[in-house]
Structures are given as C-alpha cells and as structure tokens.
Amino acid sequence: MTVRTGGSLSEDWWALILGLAIIAVAVGACFASFDLNRLISAPGVWDGLSDGWGQAIADLLRYVGLGLVLLVCLTAAAANIGYRPSRFAASFAVVYVLSILILFASAWRNSRQMYIETPLIALVLGLILGNVAKLPAWMETGLRAEFYLKIGVVLLGASLPLPIIMQAGPVALAQASIGSVVTFAVIYTTARFLKLERRLSALLAGGGSICGISAIVAIAGAVRAKREDISVATTMVVGWALVMIVVLPLLAWAWWLPSGVGGAWIGTSEYADAAGYAAAQTFGRIAISGAPEQSLQAYTLVKIIGRDMWIGVWAASLSLVSLLRWEPSETHHGADLSQIWTRFPKFILGFFLASVAITVASKWFPGGNFGTLRPGLLAPVETMRNWLFTFSFLSIGTSLRIRAMAPVTGNAFVAFSAGVAVNLILGYILSAVVFGSYWTAIGR
Image (tube, rainbow, N blue to C red; front, side, top):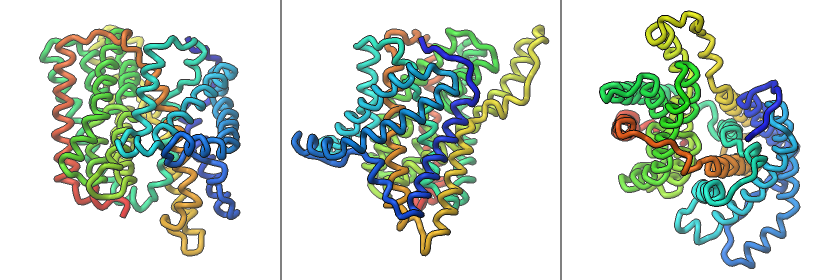
C-alpha cells in the first residue's frame, strides 16, 4: 500500500510546473544554440540485435543522465505531493529501466512495420507484471500513471501553437460539449430505466461521457457514492477503454478518415486520456492522409481541452442535485460551488501556457516558424513527452488487476454500452461531417 505524508501542491500543479520547466529549458537551449537532443534521447529504428545493442551502448550515458535528472525532479515533486521519496525513487528507477526496454522494442523495424506501438507494448507488459508477477508494495509509489500523463499533456501544448487552438478550440469545445451532454443523458437515463441506483447511474454516466476514472473519482466524492459502485463504474471504463485502443484506430483507418478527423473522433469516443492517446498515436501512423501529429492535436483539443473540463461542471452540478434532491434530510452536507475550481484539472492551464510560450518564442527567432524550430526546440520536448507517456502506459497496465475487477451486472453493462454506441455514432457525425473541414485542416 502506498504510504503518503503531508503534501503541499497537488499532482496537477506539479505537472504544470515540471512541464513548463522542461519547455523553458528547451527554449533557453535553443536561444543558446545548444542542441538539447544530445541530452534527451530515445531509441532510433534498429534491425538486428547487434544494431540495437550498438545503439544502446552508444547512448548509454545519455540514458543514465536523463534518468538521473528525471529521478531527482520527479522524486522532489512526489515528496512534496506526499509520497515517501525513498520508495518513489526506487520504484521510478525500475519504471525507467523498463521504459527503455519498451522504447527499444517499439523501435524495432518489425514492430514499426506491424504498427506495434509503444503504448500497446507498455500496457501489455504492465498487465503481465501486474497480474502474473507479484509486485512488491513499494513499487506502487512510482506507478503514478495520471501524474506522468499530466506532465506529458502540458508538453503536448508545445506542439499546438495558439493559432491552431484559436482556430479549432471553439470547434473542439462545441463538439466535446455536445458529446458529453448527450452521452451523459443516454447512460444515466438508460441506467435509471433499468432500475440502477442513481449514484451508480451518475458514476457510469460521468465515466462514459467525460474523463473515465478521473470523472468517476470526482463524481463519487460529489454524490457520496458507495465503494462498490465506484468499482463497477471503473471496471466498465477500463474494459471499454482497452477495447477502444484497438477498435477505434482500425475503424478510422477502414473508413479512410484523415488523420485530424480520426483524432477528433477518438477524442469524442474514448474514455481514458492515456488509452485515447495510445489510440490517436496509433491511428496517426496508419491514417490514409494527413500528418501523424494532426491526430494527436485533434485528440488533445477534443478530449483533454474539451471533455476533461466538464469534470468540474458535472461534479458541482451533481453535488447540488445530491444535496437538494437525493439527501434532503442530510442538511449538514452543504453544497460547495467551489468544487468547480477544485475539480478543474489544473494541468490544462499548463497546456495553454506551453502553447503561449512556444508561440512567443517562435516570434523571437529570426524568421522563426514551427517548421524551422522543430529540430532544435520541439523535437527534444516531443521526445520527453514520449518518455512520460511510456511511464504512464506502463503504470496503467500494472495497476489493472483482472481478478480484482468488480463483477459487472448485466444492467450496468447495457447502460454503459448504450453510451458507447451513441458516442461512436455521434462522434463520427460531429468529427467527419459537421466539423470535418476543421479537423482535416488542423495544423496546416
């Protein structure tokens, strides 16, 4: 069991701080004409074992240096959040070494040709370690899937300059809002029609329409849900999210969707940030047209910027509903409207600030634009982002205990699956038909 002490800043705030610090270092190095790619490295494509081994030996010092920097920074943040630093440091060291192996496996040419991506390898390895092997208790401290993911999302803002957000942001917010409201209503109405308890219905609706497990946790606190209800809703989200990692990229490819359109559809249809990123990254590489980065950009705008911001709104709204209609006799639990800010994912602010920082930095360079800045400025940031997402996917896999998953009733499955169907159809209509022109041209 993870041991925590008193903390200061939350994971969201530390994700914001660390993400912006990485971008600041990248900008400073670019101004100083220092190639940060010499320090921030990741495996390149390799063929035979001798090729891969030679590459690993040549870059060994860079991997050690990067690992030490990450170890110090992340351990300091973890200690402030409230985790025991010695346990976190030991656990992260293992996570980092495993991530090196994962990145090398995904860089194998045969893996590339079969589209076996880093997220899939990380998830599968994590599932094996978490369900076949018995991990020691101290390992849990460094398996902070959401923390790593949040830092990566902040870094993702660097690849989305303000002009792109200003152009597609309103579209993303409109699409995410329509999808969130409609899907929530469908799941909740279906669940209540099937006689499911209203708190469980709210958890299923929130998990299927907003942000997966994060939404379930936020809404559970707002409506005072039972622990078994949380387990059932979490099982539904995790199960469907894993299915969608495979299904969504294949369907988008089969329907010949452009990279940006497919990314937006995945952003509307997936239930967990990490799983959705894995699906968007996979589709970006197999899309019939468009650049791979367009899929990630569209996904981030719809899922991270659009849908995730509904967490605070639903949590505060359901807190009021629970107080005024579900708990009329429990007047000692007052409705707290400050939950809108409390539940708001702070790392999204870091995403926007990263976009601002890169946009401003590009104006300072003579003739600076994102094409000329990518090798020296954006490439190391994107490499670091891929490292952090690998940590996240591996952590998610190890945390999924198949035997411990709560049994899901048929009615809960039917209610959630109704939302899945609506999400897929509505998301496709919004992404490919209503807003198709926006997502096709994103980032160009």
